[in-house]
Figure 1 (tube, rainbow, N blue to C red):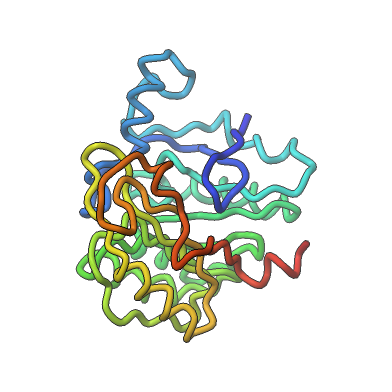
Figure 2 (tube, rainbow, N blue to C red):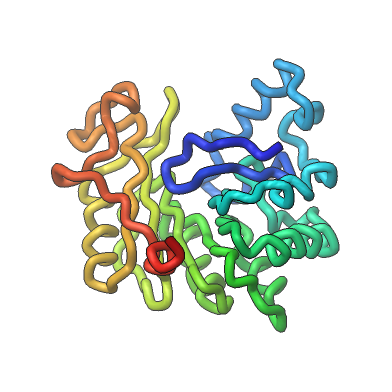
Length: 249
């Protein structure tokens, strides 16, 4: 079955693929890799290969049996557009998405070029939200143009872990931005001004802004347990969602 999620911006995770490989600085301390190691050690089905890329066709039908409209984060433990995932398998995943219009599917990738290539000449299902990771200027920012080239009902950015000041961001046709810091003992610092720069640009462009967490580094620049740092920014919690979500309630 799919799993309820503790991720603040979704409800369930659906992982018809597990495992991945690192391609940019945001991957350095990958939470999914560490979780896969623990799940393998626990003997959890589906993680026999640890973090090796693995297709899980037996999981493809999981959303079909759920009648309650649900937001699914697709492949929280992998990347749907990884270069070793066959196009035919990606097709099968989108067949499930198209056949369950009562669900919303949130798909996030660092392989933005393959995302754009896949949808060249294809229609994106209305219930599929497409996003790219934007952790820095060198690797993250260029992914936004690839995303913008795809005609999705919702396009979003996951600016997590935010590793530096992103400067000016072109948010044209971007509907939602999620920002967060890194967690764990090796977490890299997050600075208040970096987060607030993104927030202010979202405000100016009318883009929904969601602040997920400070992570290990608090707004005061001090390192502590992420629960103690919380997720408030300028004295409030930022839980904005794309407008289409409000229309569907």
